[in-house]
Amino acid sequence: YTANLAAFLTVERMESPIDSADDLAKQTKIEYGAVKDGATMTFFKKSKISTFEKMWAFMSSKPTALVKNNEEGIQRTLTADYALLMESTTIEYITQRNCNLTQIGGL
Image (cartoon, rainbow, N blue to C red; front, side, top):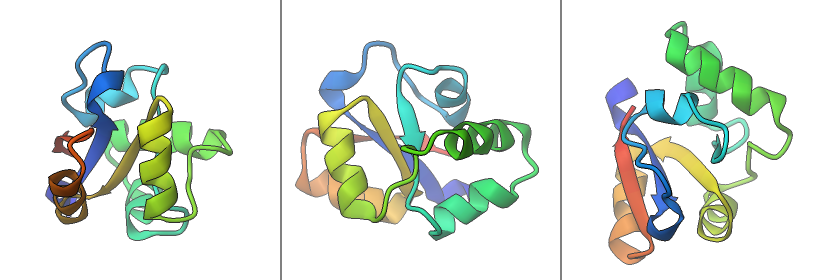
């Protein structure tokens, strides 16, 4: 399942390259999250992998990190320094239809 998760960001908001979950976890400028109570959030919440535990700690400590649905997360990604974590097949579909978004690696 870990290979099927990815993050996406707007291209123009990338000041320093983020190519992996480790890169995202090590920084605090770009907030990141997932759909509240969705499969991706549950994955991070239950993970015993240190990077993902760190990411969950970040997400769960920020009330604004989790979004209601994919649409809210996509809009937030387009308008703020935010990365939405979601299943890679969904990201591939979305990035094919919006050239302002890009997928950042598999997690």
